[in-house]
Image (cartoon, rainbow, N blue to C red; front, side, top):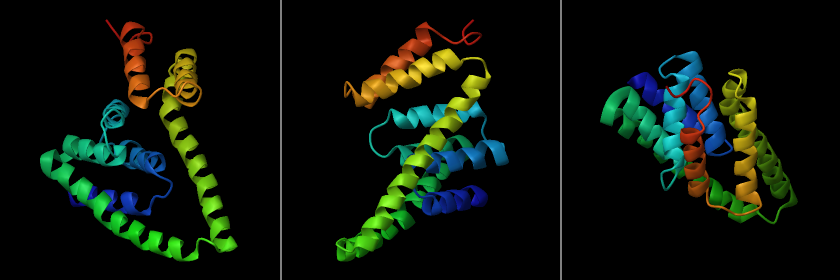
Length: 179
């Protein structure tokens, strides 16, 4: 339990760029390095966190904590991830407000934004790559592109996109998924 808490504390407070890069770091720790979760368990916790309201990272942390250590694990994960980073964001926000007219501060923020986008793409690839290796590349590509078009062109809400994708997954399962 202590190891789980310390991983949540480290990843939740030292991974920058938002939820996706943080989720990617959790994937490496929980699935690849420690084998605490299977890819399917991780994907399930990730998907359930995405369909819940509020902060997906907190929902994912609570869900994975519950899967690994029950209610105490869920509580420990949420505390480890939320309290230190919340205090840090208040401190950083105060500093940004004081120096936002400075061109150097603006350049730093621009670099951080570009890097965050790269980390989001990398974490998305981490989730998509196993499906492509399993021979589901066309189905995966259509769902990814469809979600991107739905969000950016038609401004469909994420919950509706996830609902439609779930229905597609149910009615048109990948080869070998449904008996």
